[in-house]
Length: 111
Length: 113
Image (cartoon, rainbow over the protein chains, first blue to last red):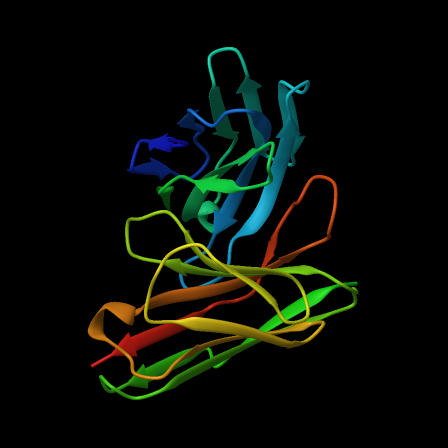
């Protein structure tokens, strides 16, 4: 069964600090992995998308990594801002284009 | 540029009442369209997807149905709502073919009382 596990479930960080979110998956055959940011009460917005051959991709202060061998991905937020408070969702696409969603990590940035 | 709209943004309905949520996409043709439900603390659950007008695939058996009367219109319906239908409903679109990055709408918060 294709699964996506994210950790931690939630975290609180001080403004200006860095944090790293984890995503482990069992989706096979793998096609691509995306990270989405979802503000409370809003639809998810794509941050990064990586295929099998890519092991890192950045979008501003967001950097995603992918290890296809260990089936792990991380999302690193640098110099966090209050606007980074949101839920971050890891989504893995199988080769048949079906998506498996993680439950998300809720990040709270405090001043 | 492409945009996706959902309405209403919030909805409170009594148990047993009908439901109609609408999703429209602008700026693209022949998109794949999706309906998801998001429960608190859970991942998004795919309810329906459509690759063309009148073509609907259901992922899970449930109290809901979907229709695609026009190329860029996707409707989620129910004849009689249940308490368990409460949740956050998201519509999404993607281009057909290739890597299907999905773009999500703003969502509809449905509360069934």
